[in-house]
Image (cartoon, rainbow over all chains, first blue to last red; front, side, top):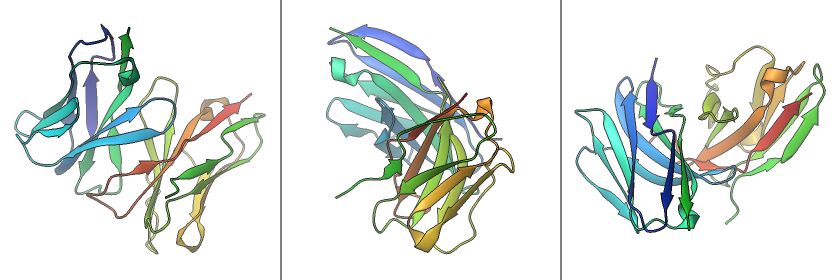
Amino acid sequence: EDKVVQSPLSLVVHEGDTVTLNCSYEVTNFRSLLWYKQEKKAPTFLFMLTSSGIEKKSGRLSSILDKKELFSILNITATQTGDSAVYLCAGWSETSGSRLTFGEGTQLTVNP
Amino acid sequence: GAGVSQSPSNKVTEKGKDVELRCDPISGHTALYWYRQSLGQGLEFLIYFQGNSAPDKSGLPSDRFSAERTGGSVSTLTIQRTQQEDSAVYLCASSLGRIDYEQYFGPGTRLTVT
């Protein structure tokens, strides 16, 4: 059974701090890993990572995948209160290509 | 353009009643997914539709759950004889294709079974 584990489960920081969120996965015939941000209900897409070692970047957010060690990290620099959300990681398998296996998420709280 | 929409946004029902949840995907998206998110949990896959292919129902937790997608667009998730453990947020997502395409999520329906 495919499995995705995120850590930490919750994190509280001050504005301006840099945070690193972790995601490890055990996905049969792994194809790609996705990061989503969930503020209230609808998760919004952040990154899709397929190749190992290539950093994807969007503003203050960046993410990288290590297919050898089976993990990914999501970095957020100079955090703002608007970054407060649950960050979800999900793995996609080529053999069960219709489903994403999600982790439990990391609840990030950025205090002013 | 318009995103994925879901209705109702909230639904409170009594145990044993049937409920129907609706999802309107983004126009042109051939793939449609239903997920369930219980309090403090990640998303649990329920069912997936792709074009005219037979749906992947492997995530449905029991035979009380069913879903259909009419005309390759709107989808309805039906839960019969609801139980308290069915209480969750039900999220719908759509994408351009089966794989390598990001999924766009709707705002969800919060179902509370009393």
